[in-house]
Length: 226
Ligand SMILES: *Cc1c(COP(=O)(O)O)cnc(C)c1O
Figure 1 (cartoon, rainbow, N blue to C red):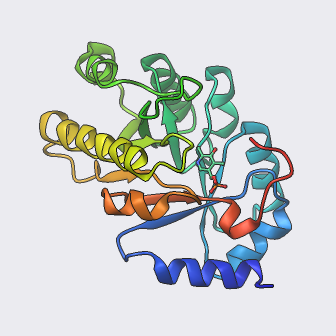
Figure 2 (figure 1 turned 180 degrees about the horizontal axis):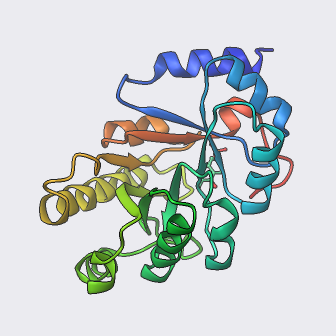
């Protein structure tokens, strides 16, 4: 059986150069993060604030880039604002304003992605295109000084149907292109499309993904499905 280290190395070999790997370590212990780290992995994704804080504390001496990939409640932003590198799951102006406020409190700028609802399942969080436009056109948004939107994120439907998954990823790519043209033309930072997980990362890359979020392929199956 191959180790986590082997899996990181072989997975990275398969990724095109422009695609970053977010190693999704949720539910797995810090020891496994350390092993991935020793293989050169630096970006780790967690979907729960409490768990991310605990691991951040345990691994303080490692230069890890922590990405929050799960739904974020406004009242929890303050716990991660000091160290989080990228929040993938911004799905409201209220949340963005709170992130801005906590970023100011910590004298930093926090990078964010707008999360879009691209799957047909209604359990998944995220904005639709009109809601995103409403945020980007609002006066409140224009006043935010300490958040930077650097791209978009989405999760495809959980299905074997490749045609469906591909069309959902293409949809997110079109949303990205549209926002880039109309709202971020002059921003060199707006360049990320976070899509693709263990089951569908290859399809996501074909549709322009720049960041894949991969958990079980690297760390093994999780005992509970989250
Ligand atoms: C758990 C999770 C992943 C990784 O899922 P795997 O199928 O284990 O690769 C990616 N993105 C989000 C938002 C997740 O919650």
